[in-house]
Image 1 (cartoon, one colour):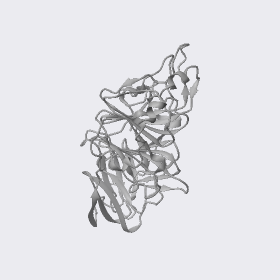
Image 2 (cartoon, helix red, strand yellow):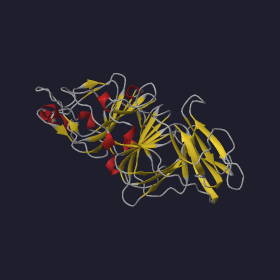
Image 3 (tube, helix red, strand yellow):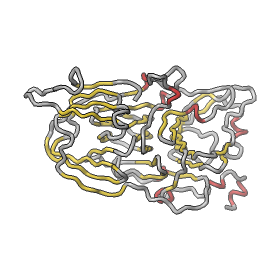
Image 4 (spheres, one colour):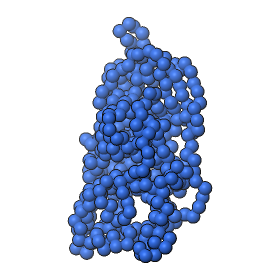
Amino acid sequence: MPFYHRLGKIPHKRHIQFRKEDGSLFREEVMGTKGFSGIQSILYHHHPPTQVSRVERLREWQPELEERGANRHRHLLTDGLAAGGDPVEGRVHLLANEDVAIGVIRPTKPMDYFFRNSDGDEVLFVHEGEGEFQSVFGRMSYRPGDYIVIPVGTTYRLEMKEGPQRFLVIESTGEITPPKRYRNEFGQLMEHSPYCERDIRVPERLEPHLESGAFTVRVKAQGQLNAYQYDFHPFDVVGWDGYLYPWIFNVEDFEPITGRIHQPPPVHQTFAGPNFVICSFVPRLYDYHPESIPAPYWHSNVNSDEVLYYVEGNFMSRKGIREGSITLHPSGLPHGPHPGKAEASIGKKGTEELAVMIDTFRPLRVTRAALEMEDTGYIYSWLPETDAAKN
């Protein structure tokens, strides 16, 4: 996280006595990454966080992948995915590699447990719905367009408001951060960054829970899902401070970088992960050179796979795309605008499209679940319509 934050009650120094009104000690927990050389926060609990009353292995957490076929462009129509499940068990993984898993969720059930991903950071992009993200660090309201960035090891749950809920989920095996080129040597976001600290929302309210009973935390660790039962509420934190905590950035606050000629995808980068990046394509003015072609040029992904999740708007370089579509343009194949789209873009002044892009630097595999929503003719969609119909 790019800046220090504190919430609730904490002692004036680290690792000293911090007592409750009855004279007993609060339990100090140092939560950090990369041993003791990464970012960290210090949390103060009513109970020892190690006090587990029962543990159970639930299942493997490994997406089932399709058998390998021809390398080709793919189009997944996720708008037809049936709603169901909760924000964790309802996840449908569609693409995965050694660094990241990408999926969608259309949850309808509340979480009657808590969840912690101990294998890496997560990002939930809110396509539809409102609610509250609750964690050991406090509460944050979420709304459409929010990127909810959840650091590894964070215990959380979503409390959803009524109405449809839809999320794009990105599960990493490492840290997800603002790109280094946006930050100075102290971690501050610089003037050329498309967003700054004012745009970032941090935990707003910390309400320690003192209830006793049976509380389950499901933990993803080492590629499997486990359940741990506690005799106290896991949100028993009275205060914390540090650099490690969940935060929210809304895509509406991303300020697009434009130019006289077409700008390459890195200008849209929003986050960096291990061997992948996340970019935001937002409403923006087109190129203003008098002879510019606003549609993107054809290009070859020589050593990266490109995934686009289409949120809303008019996707000017594509046809046959709708809200919730996911396209995969894999390494080894050129891709670009569909027939007629480059010509149609000339003279246009701007676009209202909104999409999330994930570029990976190791090949992605398609899951078996994705096959049920695939537009199998997408690879032929660059042919003239008469030829495409033959396939």
